[in-house]
Structures are given as C-alpha cells and as structure tokens.
Amino acid sequence: MKIDAPDGFTHEPLPEAIARHRHAFSGDGGAYALVILPDGTSFLCKPNGEQMDSEHLDYQQTISKIVEIYGLSAFRGA
Image 1 (tube, helix red, strand yellow):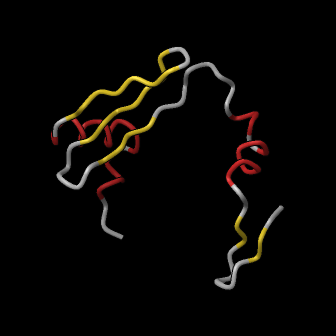
Image 2: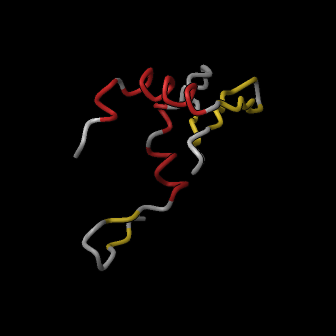
C-alpha cells in the first residue's frame, strides 16, 4: 500500500518496503550500521548470528570508517 503525501512524495510502510526488497537481504551477514553521535564518535553495529554486536569508535576511527565506506567524496562540499 503506497500513500501519496501532500509534499509530493510517495510513502510506503516499512514492512512493505522491506518485503519488496527482501532479495537484497540474503542473510549472509553483510548488513551493518554506522550510528554517528553528535560528538563525532560512533557505534559500528555488525551482525553476530541472530544478534548485533556494537563497537564504540572514537572520532578518528569514525572518520576512517566513513572514508572506508564512502571514500573521500563524503567530505566534499555540496
């Protein structure tokens, strides 16, 4: 079920979006998240079986991880 919003965007409920893209989540452990905090540190969350493990990264480690994921273009001005 897609919902037309007044702002011109089409919104889709999260469960339907995940179901539509389920083929992208093969369960091979490739998914992770980098949660960046306001102070510039972060948590790197990685799957560990049925659970997620997290590692706290300091500012320098966070910058290194962003560069590793996105490359130096992540820091270019808009």
